[in-house]
Length: 72
Image 1 (spheres, one colour):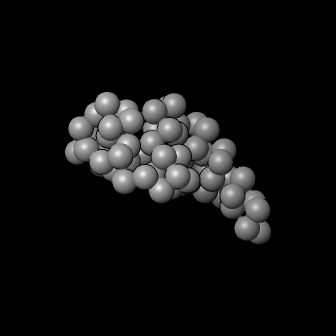
Image 2 (cartoon, one colour):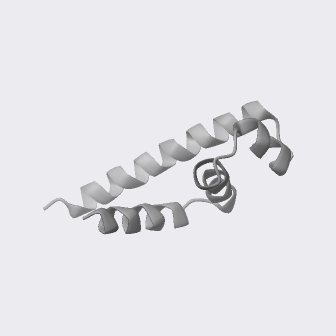
């Protein structure tokens, strides 16, 4: 079950724009702070926070879409 959830998460992440994928990876895989990500991406820290927030919202939307498609 856990493996399926991980595969589903990866599939949803692949559907996101590259910048959102990179930001998620930097934040959650490498554990960088928003300030550190901002330096790497040459963006303001606030912009990175907003980008992460929008990215999480997009993932939620993708999960809801998938749930709707799986209902009979």
